[in-house]
Amino acid sequence: MKQWLDNISSFMEQYVQPVGERMERHPYIIAMREGFLLALPFLIVGSFMLIVLFPPFDKETSYRFGQAWWALTESIGPHLWRLFQFTFNAIALFVSGTIAYKLAKAYGREPMPAALLSIMTFLLVAAPYEGTEMTISYLGGSGLIPAMFFAFFSVELTRFLDKIGFAIRLPKEIPQAVADSLNMIIPMLAVIVIVFPLVVFVEGHFGEPIPQLMMNWLAPLVKASDSMLAIVLFTFVTHILLFCGIPGSLILMQLWTPFLINNMSANLSAMQAGEELPFIVTNSFWDFYIVHGATGGLLALTFLLIWSRSIHMRSIGRVGFVPAIFSISDPVYYGLPMLLNPTFFIPLILAPVLNAVVAYAVVDAGWVGKMFLMAPWTTPAPIGAFLTTGGDYRAIILSVSIIAMNVLIYYPFFKMYEKQCLKKEQERHDRAEQEELQAENSALS
Image 1 (cartoon, rainbow, N blue to C red):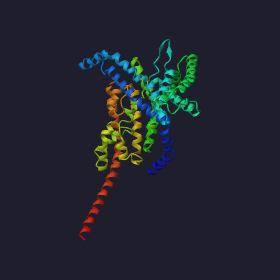
Image 2: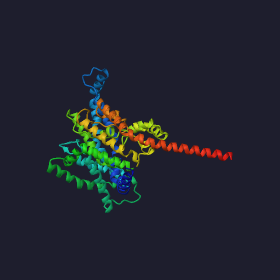
Image 3: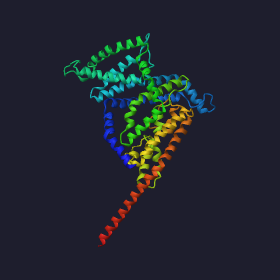
């Protein structure tokens, strides 16, 4: 077993890790990762609005608290919907700016002009006019893919124009703020000349705006992203990489996030329309069912560590317990350590994969509601599951049950590692006693 793991580790270090490191440093990956993080508060605040708008009680409830909540919802509901539309339901607009900002910064360019140009490009593409009114239905989750694409396009177009020398040359005496403003003129005109005719052609020829056309093309991928096979494979690969010290979820999640947010947005639209929610797998499904306590489901292991007879393991458990509740597992992952630790190879992979299978099967069977909201990933898993399902108490039961299942998965490997640690601690203790005895004998002689 050890030889086999050593061979895998050697292969990953030699071939996979360099690729992962290059991907992690790639400007597009950096831009997507940091751009989505920058826009995340709009999703979270918008989700909080929906928690108020969708009380977890029947409208005919006899509870006074529930009646008061419904009265509040009916009173301020229209105002909250307005706030929701310009936070959660405008996420693609914000992402178009934040990704371009971070990409330009990664290239060492002025980020703010890039962000503004990207927003203009995205609005040109995703906000068609019907008569004299602008359509905003593609500014939310359904517009994320076009938002990313045209953010990359606008930044790369500006770089290309600069590279060929097609730019306004200004004297050095001109203030930088003025220069940045004037230097946007040529890229802006280039975007209009290239993109606007394309928009007019696509809408006239296909009868649909570009975002809808792109979503039609990507429909098979969107559907595949919601399958059990997809979530199991994604979970398996990210945790294989994690075992080898490569932050797989940080790299691969950037490629999957647009689909997951689209799934959540579609669920939300269905909830608003009173229809069945179409998707199971969302960001919240990953956060609160699969990797509660951070990647690897390490919250369960942290529970066990607290009660360990090993001094080392017990101290790691006590230090890492509170962070693990809030999905931060670094103290346990690096302190135990989990990295390239053959004892924990099997549970580190098995626990999250089984989490994915069990959670998907339970939700697919209709025993627990699907998720249509978003909460911060640091929210304790049972609470996060409750909030993102709109107050489904069964989500708490599922989340706690998964944690309990993970405790059972980790337990035999925990005991195996505890035995190893106790042996080492006893050897250190015996060695220290022997050295102390030798020192006393030397002093007497």
